[in-house]
Amino acid sequence: MDKGISFPNDFNSALEDLELNSGWNRYRVKMIEHFLNKYGINSVLEIGSGDGNVAIPLSRSRKWVCVEPDMKGAEKTSLAEIETYNCFLSDLQIPSNTIPCVGIFDVIEHIEHDQMYLKEIWHMTKESGHLLLTVPAIPSMYSTFDIIVGHFRRYSKGNLRTLLESEGFKIIECRYIFSFLAVPRYISKLFDSRSDSDFSSQEALSRKKRNYKVLDLVLTRMTINVLHRIERSILVPFGLTLVCIAQRVEN
Image 1: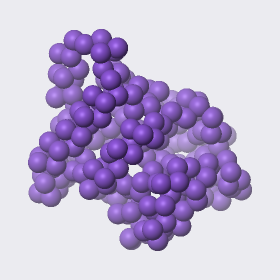
Image 2: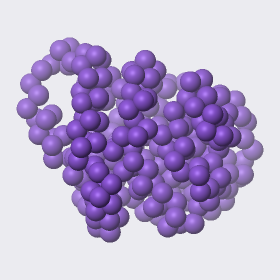
Image 3: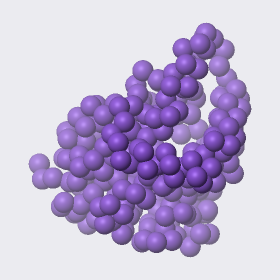
Image 4: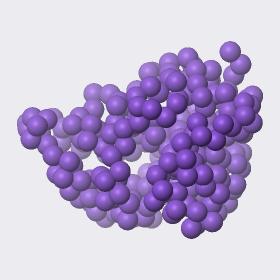
């Protein structure tokens, strides 16, 4: 099921050089790595691996396989010597009950029919295998910016749990991260009085680049370690991203 995907390649290609080494990505990767280590996961099939922002840093210590339909993204992970398939997930025709862990990082918000997509992932995942994913959080934060970058939705813990359970996954752990960015983002949205038609894709791109640069000043190695220690130890009640690990159960 690869129809109904909203992913503006021109927009995301403009960010590719910034994102991999950005403070935002380093923090996200650190939390994903924490979940992999905590649950003893040593092999991941990543679907929608993009430019390798997760795969490249994490494949150094575990088996990693990428599936990415965009040729430029697939070339980047291939050049990093990661086994990569430049195709849609459905093209692979993966047998049922074979994959120990599937990773989808900031992907399903780009899928119009996320239930159907997760159903396909359930079939390929081994019995008692894992699904590790990240998604943008707080539905009330959904904005024109989300539309421009190709998001159909943002998720809450509750609706993500309902979605996963409806498709045969049991949540083991689910956490908000980037809690320290939620309040500034909310205030920015609250005081942005412009209409949707006044907010262009070029402006969204400029804002995204500016945000990355500001975060790079804030998210130094030291602050990343401190904030990561807090968010992995305390169940914070909000954050801009949800990171979740779930396990396949039999229907």
